[in-house]
Image (tube, rainbow over all chains, first blue to last red; front, side):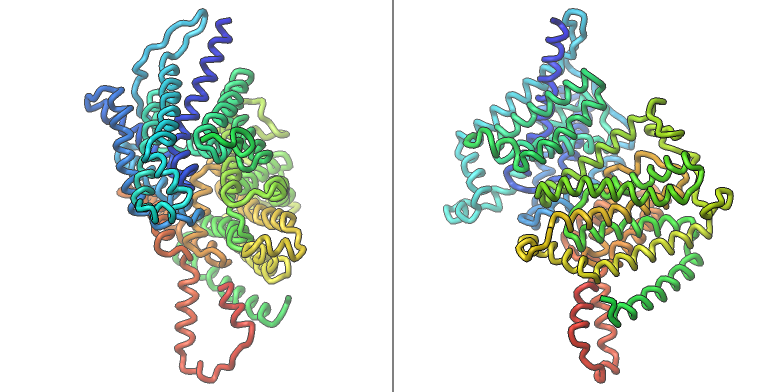
Length: 288
Length: 347
């Protein structure tokens, strides 16, 4: 019984982590069609921002939930202005340019912080569940992921800015003729997406040892989650994170964590072969 | 299509290559040059698949690593290097054919293709890193996990396992391999297969409507690129005398793509020069610690995409054409007919 509970918690945690990892990319790639290969590095920078702030004596939750997204959001704004805005509509070129950016960030962070592992301790203590020890921080991840999904849904669905952003991504000429400036909207959407990546990196930072190259661990997962999700942003994110999180944890428990990772990637390849446009191309078509 | 132009190009390539192979050892040590040649071959493989086949493969490093691992494992088991060299070409090609068939018959395009090849590379990388245990054995060869496989039989004269090909002679061997691969790629691109491949790159639907089997042709192209990458991998295994999972890493894949972009897509010599030049730059940068390596390669990639997306080779070709056109003799030069337009097409 305890084991079942533990597994349920672990599965929920895996799903929550996938949602967090992919949320920023869902905005930047899913909405804006910008293939951001620097996504992992945005997350890594969020993690470093948190650690630096905590070392300077800032409260850890403030650093994670406010400071890190703000820092990475501003950075995303700069990246959009300097590089991305010249490349809208050129898929391959944005892919290459952002790959260059990712290398650039890795190099700069290595020069600043050194090629060593840093980290902070989890701010929430673990507790015993029957015979098993459960990491209390896992619940925090699940909570943040759930709140994030609901918040994104609320913003995109019920606010005016969400509507304008969605409209501009669908038809920027139409938005422009209605008096909105697509350039500005692209810029702000990109910054929001970057901020979400920064948040994810910050929230996950206490669980991993942070090195300058740790962004690479997220990038493949983020992309397959968003691509497998398909056209509907939130429903796609939730459903594909659900499928992959479940598969990952089942194989992790049954065999080993490495096999869990490999199973996730193999499942993604098979899923994309069966549903090349993602889950929400067939199911939940009308949702957002 | 073995016309007069092919003969002239063949002599030209041979002369230039012979000069380069002869002169460069005076400037750079042959040990460094060998790895530059190997990377050049790796660049050539993606240059073929991406530049002419229009298939953006993010996982060319997978085939490179697979070639190296195949060679190492086979060399330990056979204790001789001829069959392992052949296997190192065949195994990546076979793997690419299966993977390519799955992708192209599934009609996956650009982005998805890039992501899936990336994911496959990651799977191999993870898997190879996790094979430290003694249960991961192929024949006599332990896969060795993160530490890789050291101490395998390196290249020898066929039939005589004690006559090693190393140092200077391995340099010449690699150079000849690169030259052969380059000429093979040139010949393929001049054949009808190559022309149709370029046609598919330009407009897949049109090629399909004209009755060509697009997925089959793309699969063959993909496998051909993997075969060249596998050969490069086998040579690399011989050069480094160890294979590690780093060969499958994302930064290795990134490097190959950067070489192609900087060198010039859609040219044959561009990726080779890009690979050799940038690897040498990396080698020089490795000797100082002011700037981190990936800052430089990242900045180069961003700047090239923004300001010179065509790469260096077309610029050089234009400059060369400009110089040759300014010659006073050009007044008497007769029009060449259709060939000159072809020559400007593939630089």
